[in-house]
Image (cartoon, rainbow, N blue to C red; front, side, top):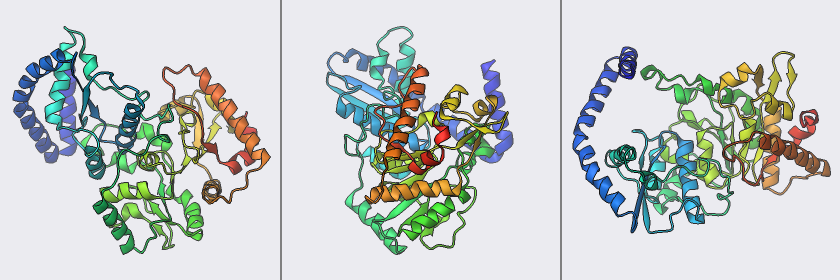
Length: 434
């Protein structure tokens, strides 16, 4: 039955993609045939690796290289956990990695990780992984040879990012290249912001060649038009603003020379994606893969984020707001506790919001602008925090933590919470904090 389903899937993809998909599948078949000797060699290799385990442990793991967020944060957190002694064997060992998918989302990031960890060709490592799993059906012990995921994937539940220097860096040649490119466009390297607003274009770019439907992610999308006011405010404050993206639905509409539609510019490249994320003053994001680059390089982030329960909370310089959650039955705005009681605080699919009669309404341009004003003024030590602000923060996080605890999650999603909710957002939404 499964064979028939797979055949139907392949025929469906060929029908959609035509000759290009046929060529791609023939190529994949040839590669598979050529790999047969490697699979055969993996049998004695895995047996030997298992036999020498008492003296020397060899572990492996596939890296999720197809999505930049996972590629950046999960790999960085692996390095942090090893450095802190978490998931680190007590005996002599070596960890080997391979790309879990056949594609890499960003070649520059791959190059930088190869300078830090041992990433071997997939065609060598994947057969070892497969046969080790197969052998586990008869002889236990194969789990010792798998690195596994971090404590909770990309969640910094041990607050490790702040404790360690970023484990990847630019060579002097790369540093010079980045400065040269920015200088070409007359951009001050010391004062620019990355604006990262998620839409469906990136994941849908290969839609004609696959049956995968990404619309379940659409609750995280944002409208770039709502961020123009914030970008204009940043330009007034002397920042250049880079609208980030590999592929986007529409351009950012501004005639201000300091607001750069990088996603649609000739400057855009894998290298500059990483360079800008690593060097920005801060990042504004709706929560998508690219923001993990500034995150692992310890850059402050202003988050306009859903789902609320998954707020990234480990950086004390980060600011957060969320979309407005509307009860579709009476058109009332849900309070913080109601977002949890409606079972959407940790929702990871659009359908879960729909099934619980919750509509997400995007933040106003003014709310977004106020968030970035606070970020700028905090970073420049110009922010005046009142006693009321402190009380509202305390009240919000007290309710938040209590509701997270009620979820009885298998794995923690937060460590010590250090981020703040946008102060003006709390002042103007005090009825929400209950």
